[in-house]
Figure (tube, rainbow, N blue to C red):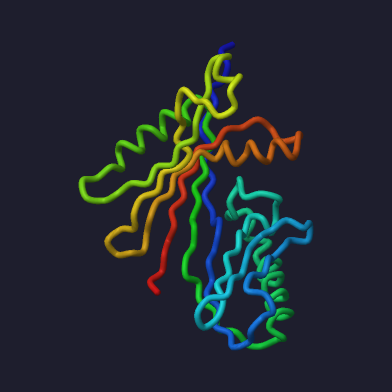
Length: 212
């Protein structure tokens, strides 16, 4: 009986929120780190003009990483997420009523590919498709080494691999695309935890930016 062909799986959800907080109270430190109950860093709050800017990674509130975005299945935990953030802010600002505005939202579409060899060609193809005559496309590369002679010298590479692609904001200044190889992020998690299953990701993130 022929082996059943693996399908590409897609998970869509929210990754990071950026919230502007108007506050008259000055904290002792310009940067405050938010941590989950397990001690995982889930966000940072930095002092800006007329208040603070909070960047919070929703998936990390429930999990130890953001490989899987905060999706529909996580909605049942939304009250837990909101309560945790609210409690932390109340402790910091002494129960002061705060005016908060969501300034940006990163909507993440994570595609688990059936074959990890598809990742590099897809990123290369998209880096060509997204090129335009007038707008700059930001492409980040990492070096690759193949062959024993390149393994001897630590920093010598004979190839390159696309790590991420970022487009400029659209004409309405509200959207931009960031596309990246999520297997690189996952590899770091694997090195820390050996029980992660071997999967490869190609991720498309759509950032929705509100006007200031």
